Image (cartoon, rainbow, N blue to C red; front, side, top):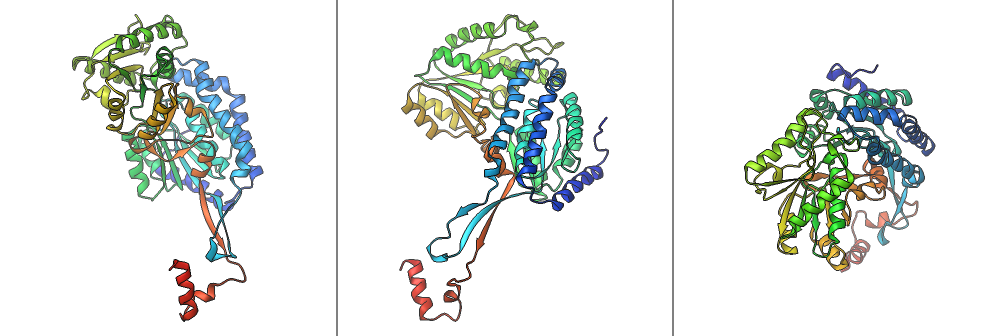
Length: 472
């Protein structure tokens, strides 16, 4: 059985072993990188059932189908993409030197950074470990991952599987609580990627700054779904509910609130009830519906709803089933009339609670979005191309899906990342490879060149050349 590091010193020793191994082989060739990616693929394919069972046990209940769709598919797709394109990604890229530096040449060489640290959250512990791990290995790095203590069963299993398939000085898995996480983030990584809350992200960035470690922060925030006037309304409601209730709302890019034309709130709620009944009949006993990950998280979501109701919000349960603290099943609920100061309208919900925000004009809806911290995702429902283009140009978000939810996250040729309070930096596919690479600029001077013409002592030749160079 693997164990977590017993001290900060032991963490440092593991880091040092990774750093020493990297320095011994700082630029692995593509065949070796590809071998590591194929090893990851075999690890996944050979242990699907065990990993899905461990994740379900950590949650209390999470259907295997959601793990296969939300975690395994994306991981295998990322490996497939890296294997197909990684050799090309690592080739030197030719760059122009411009007229005045000819006949020199220039290129950018993608070089492995060294040791990459990855802090993995609990809500998608497989996909959010594998996604950055794929990019880091494709780029030729050594990797150290800190798993979440809120998914302990999966963390232990993943630690054992990685140890069985990789040398400890190539990929190391760390388990443990908040103190271990703090010590982990304080290590002098060559890059640190954190996925989690905005509040903890600030602490991670503060810890990394002591070592001037560059960071990629994948945070969260309140991702809006905007049902514009030209939307197919019923299809929009169905897509929003499907995205919101996947993993019972415990998704960083889940729709957090819905902007709907004033007067259509009742229609939204009625449609949402029909959709919920079709997707999750008898939701309290339905094995397809994921429970809240632990009692603390269940209580947090319950408190958001209670506080909003006390502040004047109206509650609209989408099923007849009551929330059950014993099983941690929290059925979906819509809110109307929640004041802007309520915590449910300020904090990321991360659960199956969906506030509705009415608007009187599209301009007002866009102003509502733009006056708030920039979201990790934006979901627009509209059929008119001109309106879609206008909204894309006038809003800022980490990523966008038009006329559906969540799906921009599944395309490996699209970067995934936040902006502002929802994060910084991006990964997935080539963008992940670039994130975990130093794009080293290299200038090669030719044997015969004009360097001496621009060197002291400065005379008439220099004066004529500098006027030409400055365009004067």
